[in-house]
Length: 81
Image 1 (cartoon, rainbow, N blue to C red):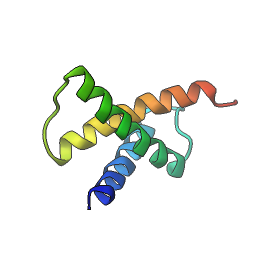
Image 2: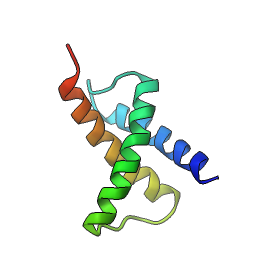
Image 3: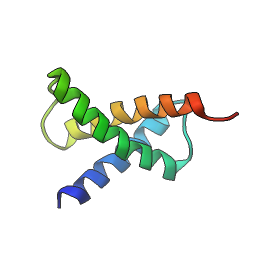
Image 4: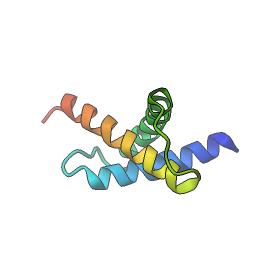
């Protein structure tokens, strides 16, 4: 159940980050994949930095969206135009 939840949160976070990042998106599928990666990165990074978010579904979405936006931004630096 944990993996399914992570995929759902990452997918939603990637989609949300793609909407927030004007011109930084890679299409819905790639945004979802980057959202899953970004959610994992953000979860690890925020834990290491001691940053606490709202618990539960909403907190997970916000944390994932922030991580996905960072990953989308970094990926956009390498995107060929």
